[in-house]
Image (tube, rainbow, N blue to C red; front, side, top):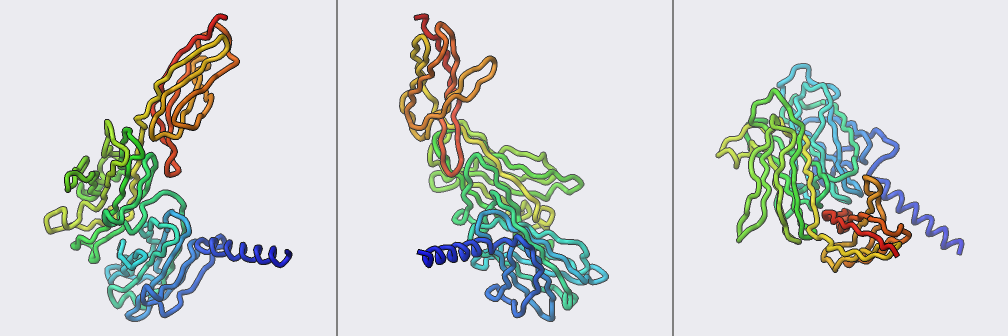
Length: 395
């Protein structure tokens, strides 16, 4: 028995150590280990740690990161011995997905003295992501640099999500943050930009809104921003419900879609990319640099179409509320009016409703309100309130 307990405790310690690996609670400073010239030889950086590296002649340096939960991987890059004068060349830093797919690129001038914040990586749980650093000129050689990492738990776009087939699942009534992480290789003429795709599916019949929010910036030409397309498949093609540019100089918030009705299972797609993408401007593109790493938020609401059809039966000291069966709901939330405000009374699970409130005063009016709710994908959706007033009997 003691041996069994010892074995179980040992295994728990191993499992705990494994799950603690992706994030360092006691941040460490590491030193690059050569050869790490390819993604397959990349040095592992435990999130929370700092890596010091050196860029040799004709060098490539590769690093990898992993998290056991969804969130964002934050990376900063700093040249520790920058070239005294700028415009002597650049480091190119490319971010890659688990299969080596490029998901973003930025360039850093060898004369840069400040910390450079890379576009965050929206990470899937248990997935490796990579950073590759390579030189743009001989002036990058013999440069020392530092990489700092951290992790933030939350709802973010999950790379790789550059196509419909890899679109991240968006659960309605939640907020998701994203960023366009692709820059042009030479800074101003290639249209190689990151694209973000989300797919959202109506959990039931109802109504929904979808809003795009960003940080408004002034003092820019009105050509830097995102190109947003909110659409659904229709008759073998795509039906755009909202399409166009959202510029950094525009208002902070833009409503992309507001529906009167959607049906359970209706799928909607949202694609986001730089307005300066090659395909959008007829063969010539400006640098998307103004929005590289610039965060945006997609928020939404969803209201169930399901509404209780209430009936109320009374006795001298009770009111019984009933409603016929509703589909695609988890249950009902009931409130009673207390003075000028409503207060929570009861939550009933089930598709039909029968609830009796007893201990009431005789010959008195009471007002109740009831709404349906649905729990799905760790989210609770609500329908509209339905109100009923009933008077208890005298005898």
